[in-house]
Image 1 (cartoon, rainbow, N blue to C red):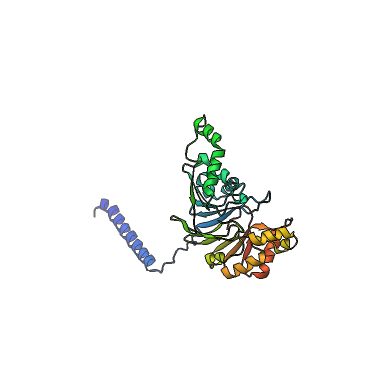
Image 2: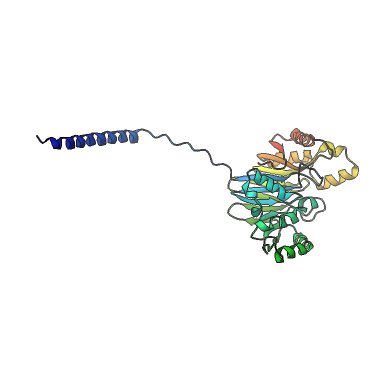
Length: 322
C-alpha cells in the first residue's frame, strides 16, 4: 500500500460527504413552504401642509392663509398670505424637505383679497437666489396687473441686485402669470389641478381648487359662502379644507358685520350641511373666524360644526400636516 496516497483519498471522501450533505439540506429548504417577507405598506405620497391658517387679523400664532400640497417631493402652494415663505422654511426645518425655498415654484391664488396675497411679493423675491426658473402663478383676472405693479415697485432693488456687486440671477424673481378660467388649469405627472368658481360676496373672480393625485383627492375652498360647487368637487374626497365662521360669534356681532359675513363667508351650520352632502374623509377648518377673542375660539367652532355633522372634523393650525 502506498501511504502517500492515503491523505488524498481521505480528502476526496470528506469532500463527497460535504457536497452530498449540502445538496440534501438545500433540497429540504427548497421543498419547504416559503413564508412571504412582510413589507410595510407604502406611505402616502401626498401631504397637505398648513402654512397659514389665519385670517386678516394679526394673529401671531397663525399666519395669513396659505397651504402647500406636497406630492412626491414637489410643492404646490395655494394662496400666499403674510409670512408664507418663513412658514415654508419652518416646515422644511420640521422635515418637509419639499418646502425648501428653491422648490417654491408654483402657486395657485384663490382670489385677490389682501390677506391671501400680501405674501405674494415675499414669494416672488425671498426665494429668488434659490430659484433658477420663474415662479409660475395661477389665479383670477387681475393677477397679471398685480404682478406687474409688484415688480415695478421693487425695480430699484432688482437693478441693484442684478447689476451691482451681488450679481443675482435675472430669472428667479420673474413670474409667469396664468389668468385662469374654471376647469383643469394645471397637470403634470404628480397632480391634476381643477379650478372652480366659488361665491365670495362681490368678488367677480374667486376660485376653489381640487388637487387629484395618485393616492388622494384634496379640495380647498378658498374664501366662499355656501355653494353646491364644493359638494360637487369634493364628492367623498379625502380632505376638504374649508373656511368657516362661528355661529355664536355671528350672533353677538353688529348688524353691519352680520350682513358682510352672511354674504362673503360660510357659517359653521352651513358648512356642516355642506360637508354632510360632500362626505369628505376629513374636514379641516382653516381661515376660522370666531368673531370674538379667546384661545378656545377655534375649538368652539369645531364643536358648532359637530352639532350638525357626524364626520371627522379638525381645526387647522400653522405647520399642521395632514
